[in-house]
Amino acid sequence: MQAHLAGLGPSRVTLGDFLKACSGKREPWNCSTLPADWCIALGHPDYAAEWRGISDSRECEDVAAVGLVTLWDRGIGGALPTVEPEALATGDIAVVALGSLQAGAIWTGERFAIRIPSGLHFSGGLHVLKAWRP
Image 1 (cartoon, rainbow, N blue to C red):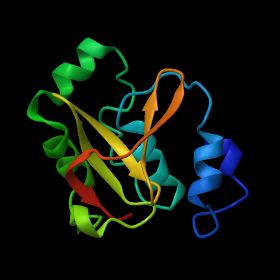
Image 2 (cartoon, helix red, strand yellow):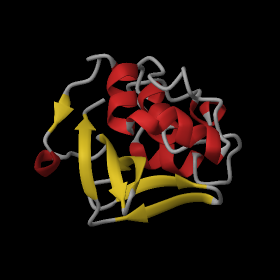
Image 3 (cartoon, rainbow, N blue to C red):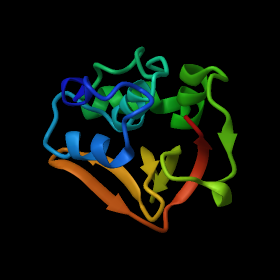
Image 4 (cartoon, one colour):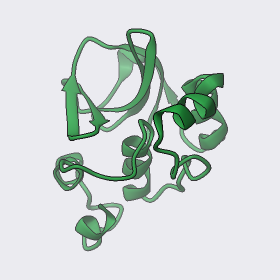
C-alpha cells in the first residue's frame, strides 16, 4: 500500500487515493491495519506496530481481549486528539461495534471503511465506541 502512495507525501494523500490503493485483498491484515495505515500515510507513527503482524483470528481475539479501545488508546498514546462521534469529519478513525464484535474503521464522510478479507467494506449506521482525528 505504501508503494502506491509513495509519491504523494503526507500532506498530499487524499482519503480517496488511500482507499483506492487499499481496495484489493491484502495479507496479512487485522481489523486495525486500515486505520493505522491511514495514520501512517498522513505522517503519524504506526500506533498498531505492536500487533500489526497478527492476522490469525484466534490471535486477534487474544490480543484484543482487553477491547480495541484500550488497545488503540495504548498504541495512540495521546498522539491524536479524540473526537465525539457526532462530530466525525472525513478521515477520522474509530473503533466501531459490529454486533458483539469491534473493528477499526475510517469515516469517509458518509460511511465507515472497514478492511475485510476480500478488500474493503463500507457501512453506515455503526455505533462508534471511540474516535480520533489523525
